[in-house]
Length: 609
Image (cartoon, rainbow, N blue to C red):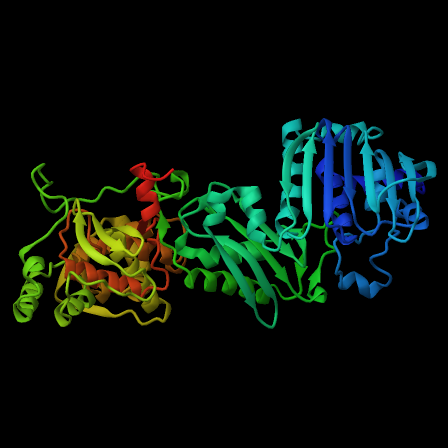
């Protein structure tokens, strides 16, 4: 075939296909232009799901007659003037062909006036061709009307999704920019019905409230972080407020809404075990850094970017979020809606074996004992009673805390991360009950110790310094041929987890040590738990399995529902939890503490509306 030069009309349509994929693409381009123009109010009117009309009006700086006419010419822009500018983009709209691309596949009318002009100017373009130009009476700013989108490219219409999805995409992009540009008032309407309305504000949380509602906004934590690489600001949700999808996450780099894997990975890694399986945090994150460190010219739609040093950006975002989570109380409020509070990684509350008989109706649901009633009478008797009452399942750290401290069960316990509380006792041998300054706390006794053991062992493992407990008499382990192969192939990795084993016959092994942190658990049971985790996984290395294995070990070694705990034991366990970096959730992401505020209690009893 003979090579031919493409016509200008065809070139424009090809460019439009790259930039203008759907009605939401038009809205995005026009929104970004309005923001760059310094608007404090942006009004978006949609008809026919964006195919009939997209009208974006702003009160920004406007354009002169000459600029308005140049704006519809491909590769004409006010945002860049040299090659160097391409690698230091500080505005949102810069590519030059956005308005030209829109005009090439629609009937577009641009009406605009600058502050210094007495009258405005209007230009009409159809299919990329100038139809008319005239003076016009209009307020300062710019209004762009896009009629009959894709009227001359019917093939594009076939690729559009159902109307409801297209409208959702429009609302989504407006929402993203409404969240970050708090100084701008946004209004979005479809066929005369208001979909979004935000007022200009000085605080992003007001816009989060407008978009996501006050219940979600109440559970957001403010981020304000700065280092030599980047400034990170915005909000992230407490682990108690999670969503079933990632659509509640918005990332911005130098004011531009982007989808970026580096930022996403930093977000999830920062939450780590605070996240429940298949649940996602709410996040509105603004990352500002030197424009020369970002390449925004890697995709026609500009929602994908490239960092010159992604590792530094990752570290900045990670540290900003991790610091915020560590510096805030993450106690779950009872008022958080039920769908946001995960029960277990399998969708329901776990069932733990009971080691004591169930309560009869005549028993008091709050556990007390003679020690608690007479603790203040004789401190020496008290200490002896506590030591004798330590159950076998308690770790050495908890035993030492109980034995070495005389605890007054009537006094408030002051902790560093957890709220101050006065321990009242147990409920159903499964939960600790405590009084706080403003209400009361329910605490899951199993996950209190699970989190403490998990972090203690994870720290040892990460530093390659797992403390091992020598068994007085080595245990003989009988293996199937399949498990025998697994153990032989993973002896070094098992040793790194605290298990020293050696062959003892064809399908038998001797277990000589176990991790000291979990030393009070049945050694065989613990080893078989780890072996099962390794055998069932498709991953080749134990390092890739570490998280899952250590979580399972901590769960196995922790106290269960049905185990009785005295007040001194409860306090000792809570002090161990308080030493943790993340004392708010179990390693699976379930809440450890749920707070019932005084206001919430009064609402339950209808003392308050």
